[in-house]
Image (tube, rainbow, N blue to C red; front, side):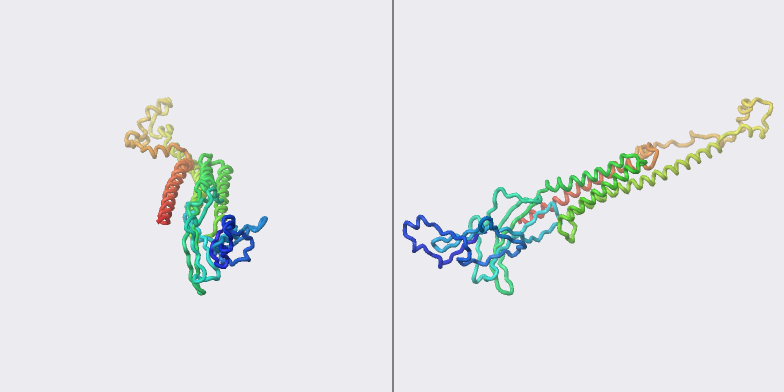
Length: 369
């Protein structure tokens, strides 16, 4: 941080000889207590530290006309109020406020330098998936109960590198959800395999969601990352519930198949023809059994015949025909889930990215205007 002001008590230009004026451009000091200093402080500072290795990192240059240039190296941790509704697709603007602590505006006024008031190094790199989107400077004079104070403000716009969050959050969550769908291709009788796969993916997704929440400050509103992680947990949990439904359907299928077999046996017993009953209807006993059956065939009641030609033939549609190709209802649930779950997740991705990217773009335009 550099500050420059003029102190007419330090003018020594008239004391220099002509030869000395060319050689001495300014005097350098390292003791700030020897000259008057403004009581500058950072209004939103939380933690600050000076650099004193190996010597205090500061210098004071006194020019012949009384100008004083004070440069010091400091490290600051400042507070910044952020709105994280679009995290991690958001941009945050943080301010650095510089003001006088005790001198009012009638005594001390801060003015930005005309050229290059804020200088940013070209090789600046920020941790945590951030990048510097832009910066600016303005005035932020404040009025308090003790008077009006001059204030300077540096605006720093921080944009998040989306690729960082795609690699660390979105892709791992998508892979966990996809792994949970593998259970749809396993046999419904493989209970240990399907339960272990569902529970493992659910625990992995819950751990990922907890780690995301721990890295962010608690807020009262829903963030974009909360929507993503919550829906991913819902899909993994739904895959586990799907197997519970399949297990219940498989047991119902077994009971249904047993009842169908019993009903078919009763129908066969009811529809079977007993030739011995023809003897009670007057058939000659001396005839050969085979001839007796043939000659007594006219005694069979018409209701014993199956008239298939009288039943109209209905052509089943493709969907019902495809559904009847599977023997068990549990198998149908797995087949539907193989198509339904990826389709719904793809639709959610289309809505999520289109909605939040459009909101992020509109937020950028509002800040630019």
